[in-house]
Length: 84
Image: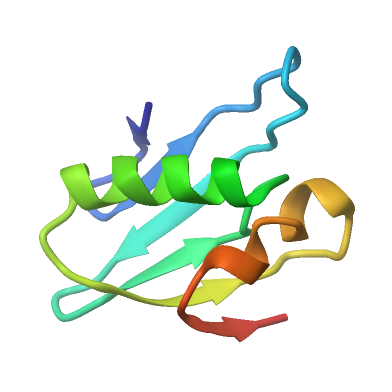
């Protein structure tokens, strides 16, 4: 589930039970940027589905804030340019 922080910034909250970290999305006028890739391909896919249902622009990039496992293990399943 995504939470809206501002009109263009969304995030999924940390889940202690599944070690899923906060993930973010910044939506611009033409494209969006994900912040971190999640702790698994399944987590990344779930987050991307939530994002796709919430915003009207395509995701083009993912930024990795740091290289801890719970922020990068989903990267392999995301078909976007990564910045890290």
